[in-house]
Each structure stands twice: as structure tokens, then as C-alpha cells.
Length: 336
Image 1 (cartoon, helix red, strand yellow):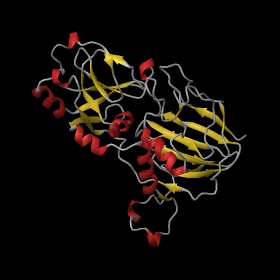
Image 2 (tube, helix red, strand yellow):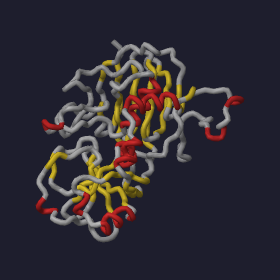
Image 3 (cartoon, rainbow, N blue to C red):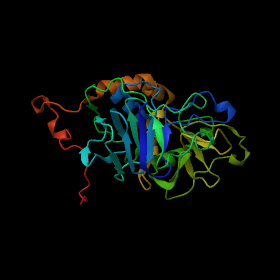
């Protein structure tokens, strides 16, 4: 059986898939990849489905190799990638020969990068999935020296593909819908909330991201009398001091703090990938608008696959030549 060897890997790296559904009533949130879009992008590049599992790198470097030829997809926060010292393009699929060393380093743009393989990672299942859920005690962080089983890459000869650049890594707008507790906030308070430019705090992890701002706190009426109830991914929960936290992949499943609304699924990756200090702001949309924007993961995967394009193209046919990455890999201008 082919194997993946992690020669070097940074802290808190883990295996992640799309998470576990149906366990909220047992106190386990869905978990899974912090940037679900990146996981679907990898599946699109490799011709895989919704069961894909990848190595999630939270701003951590990695050096790895495989024991048999594999295609490898690099998605999520753009990183510097090399194979045996040869720069390769991020946001694309490449061939990795047995024994070659793939090296990846963060660029400081975005937080979570993903590496997936054509043969798929074949570790044991836990509650039907392979993803690590730190707060739920399922799985553990990957460490240097770890060896993981891979399946054979049945599509090893498939032409490599790439994705067009995405701008979800530098903060920006977070669309949200109102919820049962939005009425605890006055219209003036809601207007102030939407007008505020927040900064992502360094106090963020797989459970939630704190947002900081200048100005008065966002207090709710009767917030001390709220009964604990089920909370979900994207909920914007206010502390007793009126500070917002957006709940992320491994959020707790019950809470008694007031929630001013919930970020829509399409924008979760934007806040998860934002670096500390990145500017973020909220825009309220209606439930009808949110429903119109919603896509199932199956449909989103199809759209990403349709939008991908061959990694190598004839320049004569490239109408978007100026926007194409002609030099493989990424550079910062600070290389030796």
C-alpha cells in the first residue's frame, strides 16, 4: 500500500474532511475543514467526491513524500510550494513521484492551507469520518515522522488542472441573517453593528474567532435571562461585555450568550482564513436572499470543477494571459 510520510510538520496540523453530521444532539459539532471551499477545490482538481480528506496546515510548514506516484492538490491559503527545490503553483494539481520531497511554507496570506492526494488518505474512520475533532477528542494533531496509508491513484495520468485566484484570504464582508435573539438588539444597535469595521483578534482557533472594535459594546436587552440553547456554525455570539465571537468548525453545541445573527455558510471561510488584524464587517441580508445564495456542497463542487482549467495551456488560446501564473509557484521577493 502506498504511504505518505510527514518528514516535518508544524503544530496543530491535522487530517480534515467535511466533518460529521447528525451528532449535534450528542454534543458534537460537525467539525471538519476550517475552509470547506478549499476542500471542495481539492476534490475538484483531483476528480474526487465529497468524502475527500486532506492535511490541514494552520500557517505551518511541511515537508513530505510519498512511496508511489500520486497527484497532489494544493488549495486554501496560498503558500510557497516546491518539489525537490523546483517551485510549483499553488491552487493547482501536480504529479509527485515516489521519493520526491514536497515542501510547503506559509506566505502570511490566509491561515489554512490544504494538501490532498489522488489516492486519498486511508486512515481508520471514527464516527464515520477521518477528520480530527480536537474539542471532541477524535483524532490528534499530526507530528513529524507520521506515516499515513494512501490508496493507489487511479487517475494518476489525468491532466493537471488549476483554479483561478480567490480573494477570500484577506478579510472583508461577512453577510449574516437575523435569528431568534436579534430582536434583543435595538435598530440603532443593529445599524451600529453593520457600520462598524472590526479587526480579527489573535484570539481565534477552530472553535471561534473573536472580533475587536473601537467604540461602545453591543449589549442586548435582558441578556442575563437568556436560557442556554442549541447554537450552530456561523452564529455571532456576544459575550457579557458585548464583544462578538463568530462560531467556527468545532464550536460548542449549547450556549447562553445572546446571538445577534448568523454568518451565512458562503462567508465562513472568509473569517476562518482572515489573519489577525484583518478588517471585517457585517452586512445583514434577508432569509430569502440567503436561500437564493445557498448551494449544496455537491453543487458547489460541480461549479468549482467546471470553473477549473488546464494547468498548462497554449498561450495563443489564453485570452486572460495577463492574469495567468506564468511562473510556477509563488515568490515573496525575499528569497535567497
